[in-house]
Amino acid sequence: MLLLLLVNVNSAISHDFWLEAHPFYTSPSKTVEISIHVGNEFAGDSLPNIPNWYSDFSLYQPGSKTKIEGEMGRDPAGFFTPDKNGTYAIGYQSTYTYIEIEPEIFLKYLTMEGLEHAIAYRQKNNLTDTPGKENYIRHPKALVQSGDSFEIDNSTLTFGYELEIIPLSNPYRKKLNDKLSVKVLYQGKPIKDILLIALTRASPEKTQSVRTDAQGVATIELNQTGPWLLKAVHILNLKDKKADWESHWASLTFEMR
Image (cartoon, rainbow, N blue to C red; front, side, top):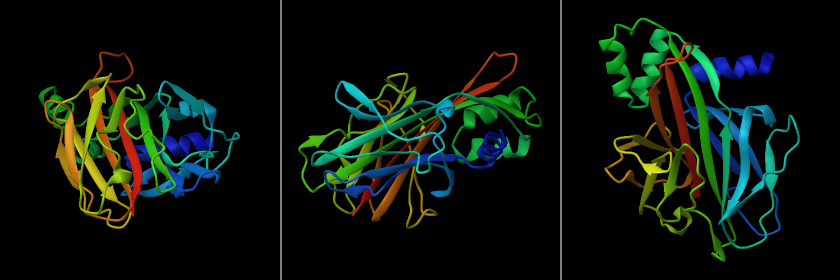
């Protein structure tokens, strides 16, 4: 109970939620550990495997998915072993969590994530000085490269999450300073004007922030080596007795050599 309370309090301050592979580059038949993280600027705490905290933690392949192995309380939360050369895709979907956030912290997070419509709604309805009452859910994904060839390539798969970042090409086929375009989907449809933020472990302060176009597409430049984090947030106003907002948090991680 105490750990769950700490995670919820931390979530009010920490906005990023992502998966990490250890390592992102591997070889067939070598076990890859998968950890779950919450924090800011690609740094923070890792979370254990608590099945009540998620509805999905799977390895995705075309037309199927396989549960990621991992015991209760394990950290790193799970692991898998690739059997071929190519790109593997892992997804995690949390359960919904309710939280109340102090007004100034709520405004800060809405501003950081580019959610101006929510800020405008609160101003219009004289709610700026009230707590943010929110149900939130997380949808992180990670891509892992096994070997140097592409016998399989699951990098562009759609998982069916409520909010999802999907590469339009495989980042592991890219070279340094290449462009990478991704599509952001909400309920399976492209969503316009969502703020996509990209940052690296090497220089987390140097973010790229791009709004999606009418097709839900945003393009970044892969100008750093090392792990990358792409993230986006969508928030909806609710007519609910408890929560005023429902937010969806999507992320995508991979590594550039």
